[in-house]
Image (cartoon, rainbow, N blue to C red; front, side, top):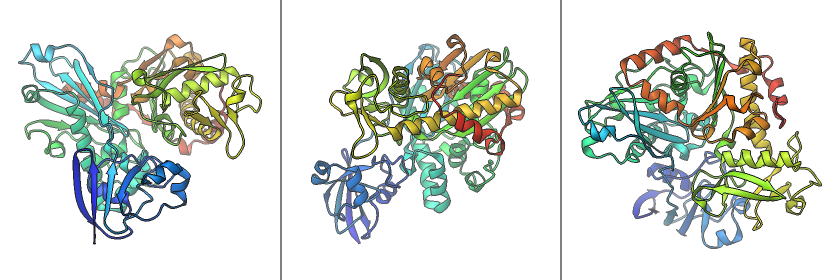
Length: 523
């Protein structure tokens, strides 16, 4: 056995590892964070580490993803590099807290006799925590962290397969969920006195997140027909968070709906008044696992669609999380982009919302045609379009350090096509036309940030008047807060019974509609 030293900031861990062991497995076993959106397939190039000693020579895939300069200083991909002799690996610190922290009223500090609750949205990418007054359901503070399960992949299927293949991986995925929840609560920076007043916690998430956290069997959701092991509520789940919360705190898991439509979608139904809507209403929770919720005022239909990770910036050449330097909005003027970035830093890459706005601007300017193809001789930016020695690449900055490829555009088309096709199938089932919709809601950590003009213009949602569209970032969190009360939890159980899940794979028109929905056009 060889000695492998893992360095993460001020933390240092020394473990034993056999020759040939992948760095990524050693890092995961040591419970250290690692960016690995592609689940170790070697396709994303995100799991960069610095090797100061040992390791096998870089392979062909590493030469594709790493520059000569990176290789020269010892940068490696953790999924490809393997132990060879004693090894020392330095991990780049990952930002675990997001910029999605807010403070509401100070009632929780002023009215000290009022008990408190925590509403947790256990998302595939982001885990959010909301401090809630239990007397009236008011959310007074919110914070978030990254879901540490990303070391097993950005998509839920990769995580489920990892859990199926190894009991150790399944247990580690549960522990990572608990750790992520703990970090989200920690981002609220609550005093011990405030924490002692917490009496109830609700946790919502998609079916995969729910089952991995609840430690339920996952075979039924990892293979056809993709249905939950159980959809019932768990009213006494205290043991799941016993490592981070006092035993007296009641932990409750609301029911899931079916397929991959989980309690996060159920929470959105509660938050957006699907129990008593004014008329036809559509809500879309945008993310890797997109969820579509539609009612005609009486019947509620829900569906889940695998939009893929493009909305999270994964599988995009210059895609990145919402951290400093990430592009979130853009305007194209006379062939020059004016970018809005997080922290007003120099542009470093594209978030999902930035990608959508950039593509919308390029389609509007005729640089990308409605089929999604980069135009050979565009009216603008022709000097920035490179077509030799590889795929077409359009450089977005004068420094040529942020770019867009034809493949990136196709990834976005597949993601938006999946969402639009799911919407169309549900509308067909209820006999609704776009003009019938009285309200359209975009929600989720990604959906709540989108430019409405771009979303309509690219055809991601039906062509409705923009004033009918709302962006509400924390729909699942709002619903989870509602579920903290007995009446709210009962409402969730009622909505779960009433909502009907539509299996898109069994719809004869879905594939045809999906292909049609790939085009960039309003309608």
